[in-house]
Image (cartoon, rainbow, N blue to C red):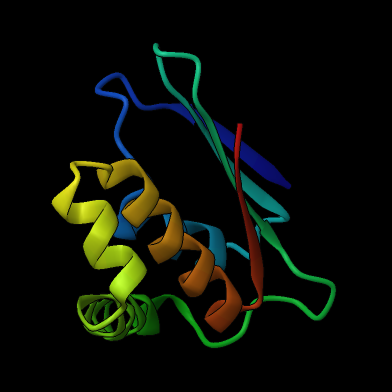
Length: 103
């Protein structure tokens, strides 16, 4: 099962988006934005790791990691918040057994 929904403000995935995908064991969750951006988080070959209740802690831990990541800091300083979001979701995906892509 896959789930596609819209993000009318062109924003990134929410914690709830990812938790829903994990909780319902979805094969993929997608978000489509008016600016043409398509986000995807797919379940990896070995399935989701952990459960929906873990997502908040995983996000918080990855955010802490990014605070000390020089590349993330440079993106943030230059106003490239989308690149920081992509780094965040790539790392979250690795930790939960998923694959994040943005088109």
